[in-house]
Length: 552
Image (cartoon, rainbow, N blue to C red; front, side, top):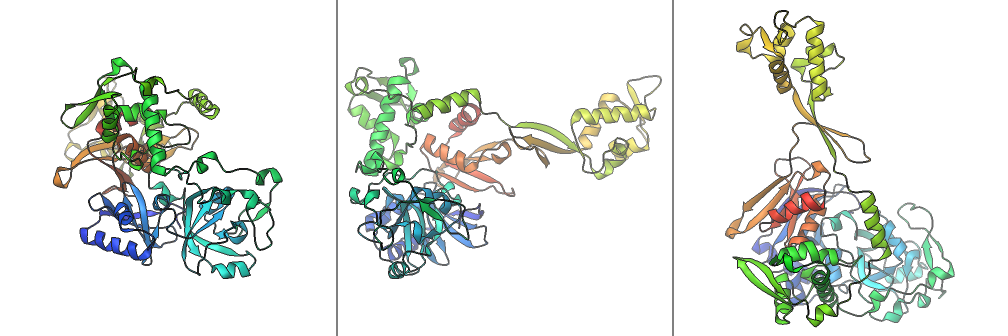
């Protein structure tokens, strides 16, 4: 459903009465969720937005977003969780298991076919036709897709595991997932690790030990499969999926690791006092191991300030509020056993390769040219040079055309070559009505200035390795404004990112991490097909650093 880009119709904050109704609907739709879990999913005070959108097939979908992530979506009065919600509560739906190679096809819009379903020793989950179910990959309970059962479990078994098993609605990596923070599925160990061993997997009803991988292209939404070699089927699950640690505990470990890494290798005594936001955004995030994503909200601390309070209690750092509402690290005990015993990990070969490539091929901003478009009332002036209404020209081309026109028609004043005599065409193109019978000559610079002013503005944007993009109108700069909302809450709003090749959803995800603040991507008022990013609080400093130093 979300394999292609969708169009946002509206994005509004949820009303109190609607929030209560949503809680009741979630309770009825997902009875496996307890009261505390529902309160976590739909908090009483935190921002919760209702997004109305149209998918590419024309269906109207309502999405509920919390903390910048879509958590639920509603289609034809049926409520569905997103992958972000299922990662927090992976056991609320019956889950079918498939192979990692099948995920690419699901993301592309294919349904899950029964030949690709892995049947564990405990058997298939019990579902009826039309039941909501999740799809996970071998070795990890974190769901990667949500769909509706195309037949009951009994029918699946009776068919010999042939035909469509699950009609897929939403997947990890689709456009709904991209509207969130774009985090990856957490590593959630199987309830019984032995169940994930591929050597014990039974396919179909015959109990054979064959492993299946993709072979060929998708046909009619089906995923064709072939038998894999024995070395493929003997791969063991990753160690991360077997460590048995809850996600929150894993995030606590990652947070401490990035903190100690930053203090030991990046922060110097001369940097103190150091803003806590700078410690996080400029140092800790860059210390995150490859393939992992630091998200304080998923840790037990929830906020950076609480984590640093704990570190202060351990006497690793000293934190003070040097100005109202702004905390800074004023002292670090670099002799603390936590820091001295921390071993800085060696960068992986992949990481080194990426760094080398990035040094050899640095990111290049787009090449932007200001252009001029010929309007209907100036067409006669440009016809002799081969240009017509709507033609776009650079400023130097306009100057040359005007100069050639004046010389070719002998309009240069013989007595003063700095003046140009105005013929009827020039009069019509550059003079006001009240000047028509008063002005007969103009200096060159005045003539050219007036001509450029009367042409319509346009611009051309060329991204490296792509065809130029030509647009009419003025080039709008990236607009950053600080707005005051209800209850004196400040939000930072960013517009016009798309003009410069910046994806608003990607910028929002980065800001959410760097600022540790919720973000919302919504249609920009008064601008067609343009999005704006809204970030909680005054984040102009972070935005400036992001746009001027990091992304460019």
